[in-house]
Image 1 (spheres, rainbow, N blue to C red):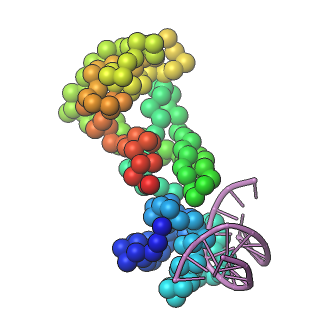
Image 2: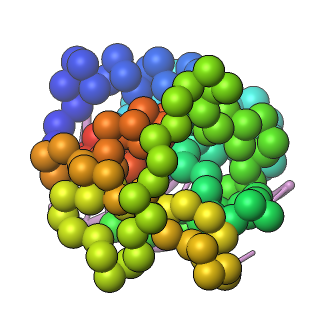
Length: 175
DNA sequence: CCCTGATTCGC
DNA sequence: GCGAATCAGG
């Protein structure tokens, strides 16, 4: 992977926005954080204030809320989730808090008609049924949406609009 | 151990 | 010029 003009421009932009080198590397893909840092220096871009940039100080937002997927399991509400992402050759795990505002944003608006689920059990799912979980997995009524999902989508057209991008698509996009 | 940027130096 | 290895730090 070479530093095309386009990639250099993205690097400059992201660096100026304050993203960390590893985050920029993840976005550009095909380069390590070392490569990013090395390039930053060669470009004579301004370094981070206060050398050493503590994780606390320099850490940019972990990921956009829109790209993150809260767990919808349980009426009790799970407020953290673990997401993994690849950084260079290492897989990173992150524990991400799901704040109240974000959880609310995943609830359908009151004027939206929520399709009544087909209440399928795990063993009743097929490649063409929506795999959106409904209810508390620890309770007997836990089930899946079960409506037909178009193409290879894991979710029906309604749940596809539930505002998040499935993990495998994020991975593909990051590549 | 997680992470950060900075530097070195063989390629 | 590039970036892995390393360093120094939170």
